[in-house]
Image 1: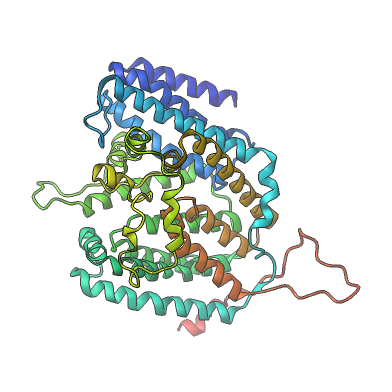
Image 2: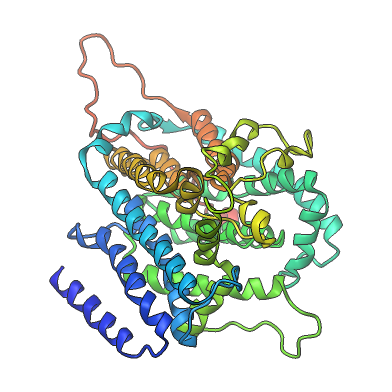
Length: 480
């Protein structure tokens, strides 16, 4: 821990010494504090788990703050892209408030996560541990999922107007999804179901994974991810890749940070590249290019996502120009299970949801994160209490995993919860599209443990349930 703190102090001193802009010098210490706080999950445990909720939350916060700080350092200036009219002392005060909010929110989250209440929340999670997976039901589920996926994708492909192997014209796919809002939801949901078979088969293949089965499963995952990306959404395939890596991490072999870090960087480069393809200018002399320069990659990511800028808009707008919403942003949860094709105008009922808030204020289609949403609804009290409660919930989820960390059902559902579930409407929508189907599939394919005979000792909580035999690999004779 001492070495890590010394490294942070040294890097901070180096960065501060090279700053010439007065405004940047005023906000840089706030950036450094907010960034340093995200190291907590990696310092409190001797061997940090990169997929522990606290670690995952810290990485997501770093991907919010670090690109913006890098962008400021690269230009040696401070700007808020969504608020060009705010300048001078007002801009410094606004950014300092935003960064204090990130620091306070992180501290509240860690307090909720590392104190004792979270450990007592394991009972709120589904009991899916133990038992076996029935192979015939797994095969049926995979067949049904593809029967949903293929017609939906054929419907999309008939309207997109580009070859099925073309991933460079993402703008065409995005236009198809946005031209008819009633189509957007059901197509995305149906295509998302296509990820279910490779994830289930991946979990079923462990712990005795063969290279042939592993390559086939990840190949299937890549194909579905490639096709899903053509809809214009870059996040769907990335999230499913994270989901698959978590399954590998817990059921087969732990993936060290030294491997995950370069993988994350390559994914970031690909996200930036796909963003260029989606927003490509036909008159541009030079086409989209992958940029492997770390600084430029982070700058491009900030220009694309603008997460800190979106949070700054919320802090600038509330409560000076509009009173705090007092929970109004979560109103769409009441209509979450009503499909848009049945009620096309439902998105007009709750305009202050997280995906529409910045659009209402500035006209930019940039969603806001949980911390900004808490402030917009409940001010600073919402940030402190909301982040603490969220931390306690996620600690309970991790303790629930640790009780059966080698059970394929628990790992598959836990991974989905970490990746998709969250207290924003975008995340709740992803929960309906991914977490709920996985939970339903597990209820169907899992045969519960048999009840012990009278007088027999019940299985202990730590006992390992018998596993289903793996699908037999094709023999050499059959292959011929």
